[in-house]
Image (cartoon, rainbow, N blue to C red; front, side, top):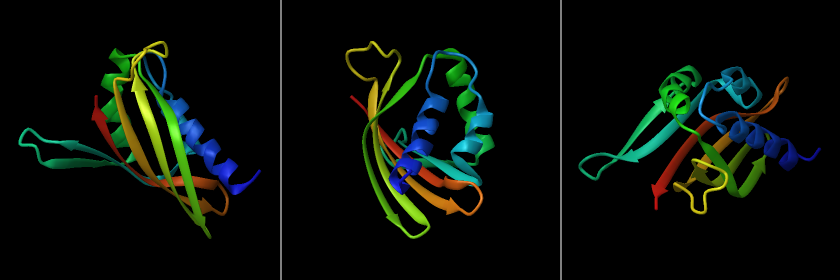
Length: 137
């Protein structure tokens, strides 16, 4: 397996972990994608039109998103991927569309994930940091 294929497998698992019909997600799957100390950063625009963000640990992300996933069908589908590798680090730009149903003609929103990975000596490639921005169409 090439480096790009190994990194791609991590991203595929990450998207599969959060996508699905409403209901609980299997958060134990995070170990296949993320280092335990990883951070996930959601950006947004506040009520005054200023940029805002929330940085979360893996547990904080699970707690933050569990109510949404419990009440909503949600599918995040990757639409583009650019991988750059240098030694033991990699950066991925991963474009996506979010949909309430795989049959939706138009996505609910589009976005991009900026994902930094580290090649762990025992675990292989794992996400160490991820920040995303999305735009509602």
